[in-house]
Length: 106
Image (cartoon, rainbow, N blue to C red; front, side, top):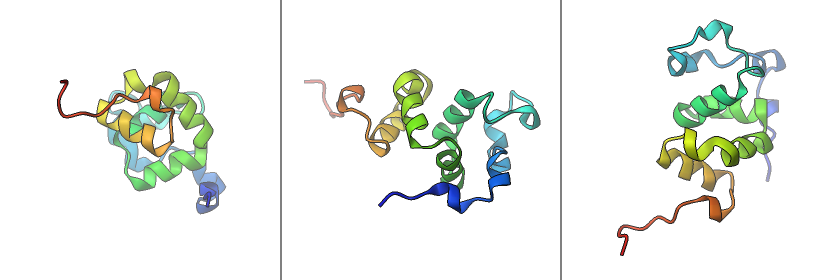
């Protein structure tokens, strides 16, 4: 059953990046970040460090197709390896994009 995350939020609230994610953007002026203009940065930081509420906002604002597109294009080099693997599973990314997980190389 697909969930429409946009129904969980006031449409006006969707336009602003959650204030709880400000610590993820310490080198930027958080008040000047725009969710559309800086989409790649926002997606990267919230996928890497976001909590449940921030991830819900991410899905509600950008939608699953756009998050999957970003993951396949930039995720491997931008996300920590463990987070990248997690998002591949969560978004059902093609298995050839994921590294095999083995305890030994032998």
